Length: 107
Figure (spheres, rainbow, N blue to C red):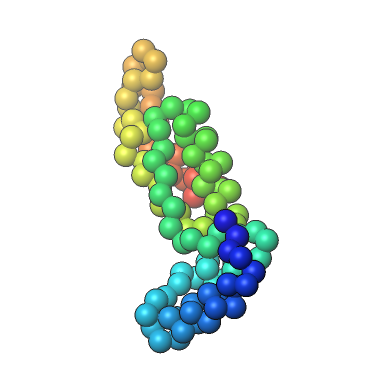
């Protein structure tokens, strides 16, 4: 939501005062990306990766998109099945969470 133009200078002065007097701080992405037509102003995003191929790759896409625009990411992988678990009735075929962690890191 855009603020009214006549209020912008006052908001800028108020923000400058709060930052310069250490009443507030902003994250690095806010400093780096403010005023740009792209980029995240927030630094922390948390994603929970679901235990399905679609869930894993959807999270990978979401995380890559946030990373591209300067967002910091945390991913919870605790829902992924452990190594040696069954997949759709096939016994002991799961590779576990480590290969997916590596794939996400490489992305």
